[in-house]
Length: 291
DNA sequence: CATACCGCCTGTTAGC
DNA sequence: TGCTAACAGGCGGTAT
Image (cartoon, rainbow, N blue to C red; front, side, top):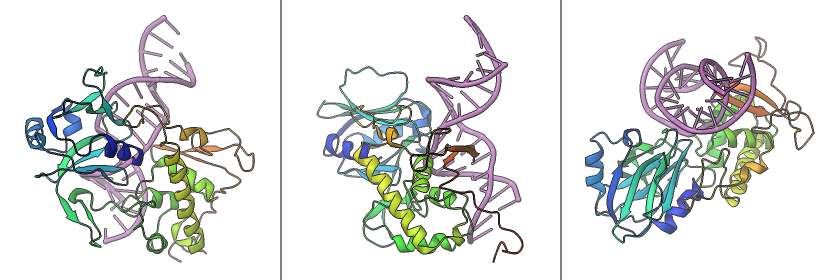
């Protein structure tokens, strides 16, 4: 998502929207007044910047509505393409600009993503602004304002497992199933470890590993697992080539050589090394669930 | 209140 | 060969 934000910053910031065409109702489902209203509100607006928090992107607009929010779901793409470029089968929305240059297109095969409008409100710390509808999304670990110690404290105070905590976007954002498994592998932690029994140094180390995983992915241009994730120029990232655990069931752990395990987890999968990341012993009566 | 987990979508692919 | 079922996954909503 940061890769996409950088692309938008380069290619669409400063440009004025001429027409907006919503081509699939699911892409605009969060804009309740409908496609015609959506188009009317965007016409003539100039995009003033490109912002991101976790997996949400937003483009602040001059003259209100405050901003256009984009969430790509798992298969969404924002592409900057010539006006005569082929639509393809999954084009969901199109932005044409007053300068008649390249268009911005929202393409989304599985339609989990979407676009909507929102107003900007100050963050609780007053440091900047955020769309009102995503104020519950936490900062991500690459955000200079992310509070490591605050996250460690919060996680240790909860009664859940560490993988669930990593995927909880209201505590730490930007972490999906792939990056959660990779960071847990790097930190040698099994995702089922109870958060209230992890030490402060262990959790600090986990944030640090997460930052490394994010940094490496960003340097490689993002993660593309099935070629659906691409940047605004249609180039896909190649970070998937450097995954250590995710998707590697049966292959050797790059650290110890043991075969990577895969288990069903929350209607998806978890990948881990059973030797480096041992399954935690179940808590029993003697240990006490509440301790 | 805190935590757990389903269902939304559709194209690809494994398996029969 | 042609079909079915599993799978990918962020997150809002609902159940516990």
